[in-house]
Image 1 (cartoon, rainbow, N blue to C red):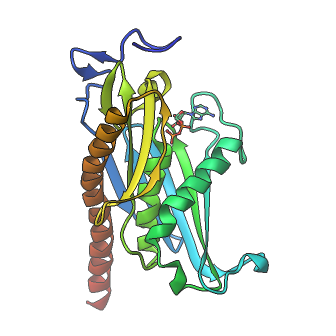
Image 2 (image 1 turned 30 degrees about the vertical axis):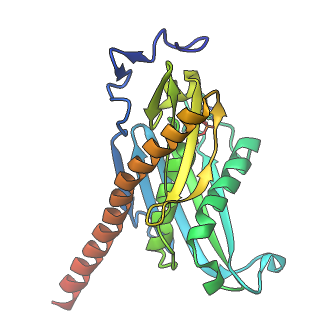
Length: 249
Ligand code: ADP
């Protein structure tokens, strides 16, 4: 059942309000190399959630005391544009955006060979242009593509998705109504090659058994998103290759 102020039901005859099956992802598009002035960039559209990520670096560290002798300083900034929500979002950092910036940083760091870039900084700027749930996980997917696009050496691409409990049923990749009025939300990020988990959060009310099922459902979906991330990078290099060929001729 939906919460106060929400729809009467979130699942009708086994279908969700946006027409999806319980284990179905929203339509996802990922593109690499969308910002000319960044060292690496990517955008993701996941249903109505839209995010752009720009990576700068490895570069010299300012202020200097952030510099680490043995590794790069990874800096992630998550921001929601004023026009990204139905009510104008207040510009500038908030408690939520500072926390999300930190969890995104911590979910990406294990995948990056930070030790290969001592005394430098890597900046990851995340701009949510339209928010419709799952922004932290979509941001992680786009940020890993942007980091790879910047040529930063990585163990693997990080892939993420949120699933949860809606009208008593487990559902993959919640959209906003489900996130707001469902019973539970569980964002998860993994390195798909090894299955190592780099982010796992949960709010709401679920059993241990349901948590295990949600993890499995999200991990399976991550393999599909992983393919889209790799394709985005392949397409980027294919375009670059074609452009280079044109120049040579
Ligand atoms: P995530 O976006 O990672 O799921 P939350 O669970 O905090 O993170 O937010 C869920 C959704 O609620 C967001 O994606 C967005 O659609 C909406 N939301 C969050 N903050 C605001 C806000 N300040 N104004 C309007 N909607 C918001």
